[in-house]
Image (cartoon, rainbow, N blue to C red; front, side):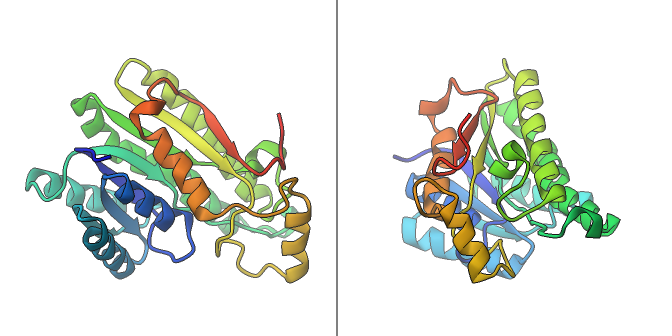
Amino acid sequence: MTTNHTAVITGAAAERGIGQATAQAYAKAGWSVVILDLDGDAAANVADGLGREFSISALGAQVDVSDEASVAEASAVIEAAVEDGRIPPVGALANIAGITSPVPFLDTTLEQWNRVMAVNATGTYLMTRALLPAMLELGYGRIVNMSSVSAQRGGGVFGKVPYSSAKAAVLGFTKALARELADSGVTVNAVAPGAVDTNIRVGSTDAQEQAIVDAIPLGRTATPEEVADVIVFLSSDAASYLQGTTIDINGGSHLH
């Protein structure tokens, strides 16, 4: 399948990450891709590799999703590339950039709280606000936001109160924006993964990792590719009637 749209993926440069797996899944499905990451050089390298592997248009750029000026700069780079014909119009935004926090609540500083909220929740807001106008003008768009099972069950995986709170904010954002945009041609949905085999749980012990697996009925963590495939599905025409929904990808660890 090929498309005439570009997918923008944030947090897409890290190896063993959901973002990079999602960018690859979009490219495999025929989308052009924009790789955005805090590491601009890595983003450019990933984009170059995907462009060559899948014969698509690909662009990599630096962004700090928590910083309004940085998001505006990245948005301008994307807009210029569309205007110059280097990439097709943006048809999908996957808000994947995120950080976690395993710190117990009473040990959490305001700085830690603000940082986790800024990257996960405010970053989703800033990126969506920056790219939505072009989608509305196009009359077509797919926005997919990254939440977490931690938002649904109140932690219990690795991230604690700040992370669960930020990811719960993403769910509220997704539903409210989906309702507001219902007749615009733009869909807004979310995914809520459980534990995924990525590097986000930096500092976890072997015992913690085993406890996480033991709590999953399917007996293993998800692969980044399994999450990526759902994100690309939500960006496809097959998902055109899904609006404001959350797809759970947790191996049965949270059933509701």
